[in-house]
Image (cartoon, rainbow, N blue to C red):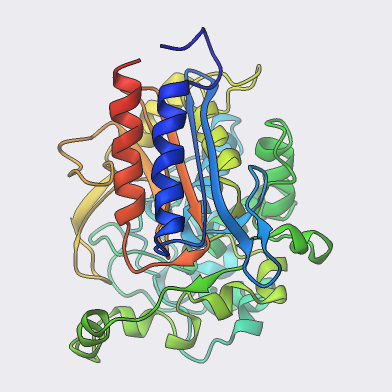
Length: 380
C-alpha cells in the first residue's frame, strides 16, 4: 500500500524491474513508463539510454518521437474547443476550411475526421519528407483529394491526413497553429510544455531520445513480402514515409507541425490522460460529460486501409492492449508505430504511457507492462 498520493512502491518496483530486464536483454534500448491514478503520478520509471552514440541516459523528462501516439493530444484539443463552443462535432470541415469541399468532400464532418470515417485517408504518393514539413502544401494536397468512400460509411485509419485535417480545423477556428494551441490549452497548463510537442524547435532537439529500428527478422520480412501490392495501405502514403528511425530522427521532421504524431515523454502524455480522467494539480482538461461523449464508441468495423477489426471513439481507439474493445470498453488511447502506447481508463482511473526508442513491429512490451501496472494497482 502507498501513502495517500505519490509513487506506489510496489507498482514502481515491478515496472522498474520489468523495463530493466528489457534493456539488459537487448530487447529495448531506452524506455519510460509513467502512470497517473486519480490525479497523482504513481509510477515514474526509466531505463536505458536515450542516445547510444553518447551513452546519454533516459530521464523522466526525455522526449521521444512516438509517431501516432500523440494523435491523442490533437484529439484532446478538438474536444476542448468543442466544449468552448468554437465548433461542433457535426460541423462540416468545409464550413471552417472552404477549399476542402473540392471533389465532393463538402459533407465531411469533424466527427468523421475524429473517428477515421471521413474517407480521406491518403496523401499523394509523390509526397516527400520535405513536403510533410510544408503545412500549406500538405493542406492544399488534402483539400484537392478525392473521397475513397462516402463519409461515415467505412472506417479506415487516416495515418497522416488525420493530423493535417484536425490541425487545419484548429487553425481556421482559432487563428493559431496547432502547436501554439497545444501549448496554450494542454502542455502549458499541465506544466509539460518542454516535454510534449507536435513540432519541436531545433534548439530543443538535443534532448530527444534517438530512434533506432529493431533488427529485422525473417518472419517479419516474409510477412511483408507476402502482402499483395494492391493493398490500400500501400496507396495511402509512399513507402518512403513509413515510420522508421531514419525518418523519425530527421531534424526537419522533428521541427515541423505534423500532428498525426508528436514528441513526448511518457510522463507528459500520461499526465494529459490523467487530466482527462481527473483533476491534476488543479487542471482538468474536459468535463466528465464531455469525456463520456468523446470516449464512447463512434465507429467500428474492418479497417478499410489495414484490414483488421478496429473500434474508435472520437479521436481515441477503444480497448486496452491485450484485450478486445468488448472486454475493456472503458479504455481509450492511441498507440504509435514502434510500440509506444498511452491510454486512459475511466473504470480504473488509470492513465498509462510507455515510450521507447527502439522501433519494434509489435506492442508486446506495452501490453506486458500495462498488465503489470493494472495488476499492481488492483492490489493497492
